[in-house]
Length: 132
Image (cartoon, rainbow, N blue to C red; front, side, top):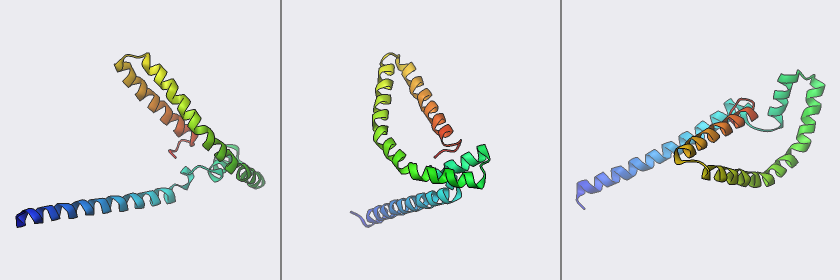
C-alpha cells in the first residue's frame, strides 16, 4: 500500500472508532438523563401509587397502605406476567398471521401499520399517557 492510502485507511478507522465511542457515550448519557428526568415513566408500585393518588386524592394513610399492598404483591405479579407474556405474544403472532393470510398485499401493509399504531396507543394508555 502507498503511504497516502495507509494514512487514509488509518484516518477512516480512527473516525469510525470515534463515532462508535461518541454514539455509545451519548446513548448512555441520554438513558441516564431520561431516567433521572422522568422517574414517573418507570413501571412499578411507586408510579401506580402516584397515579392513584392523582386520580383518587388518597389520604396520606391510604397512600401508605396502598403502597405497602402494591409492594407486597408486585414481584409475584411481575413474575406471573413474565411467564405468561411469551404465550400471549405467541398467540397474538398466530392471530396476526391468520389475519394476514386473508388480506391482499396492500391490505397486509395497512393491517401491520394499523396494529402497530393500536398497540403503541394501548401501551401509551397503559403507562398513564407516558411511553415507558
